[in-house]
Image (cartoon, rainbow, N blue to C red; front, side):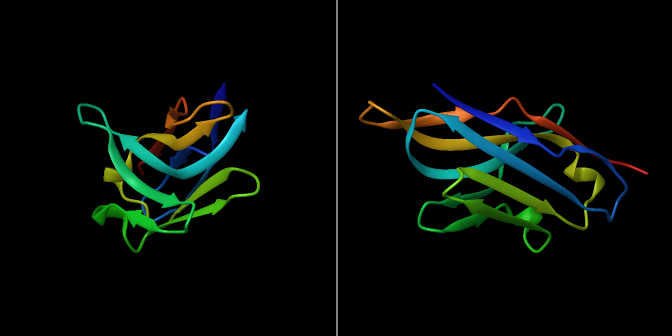
Length: 121
């Protein structure tokens, strides 16, 4: 089995910064991409940022220039540095991985349990 565990959420004032971290563990054969999604109350889950094993990065338009995603392929970790936070960034942030489990032919989606980020004065 594969597990994704997030850390780093919390309460921050507008304009502040937070760093989220996620570690994948288990019988991992290969990690194709990792990233972060978020879901605000009453809204659908949306992509925040993702990075592939080749280093290709995708950001949501709403976070470009403020958030930075990084990955340590050797450790199967992904971080999200969030700067200049806005109240509309408030959401539960979920770590995502497109991961091939040892012994399986295909990869599948894995999700963390989520970490709350609240931006408020």
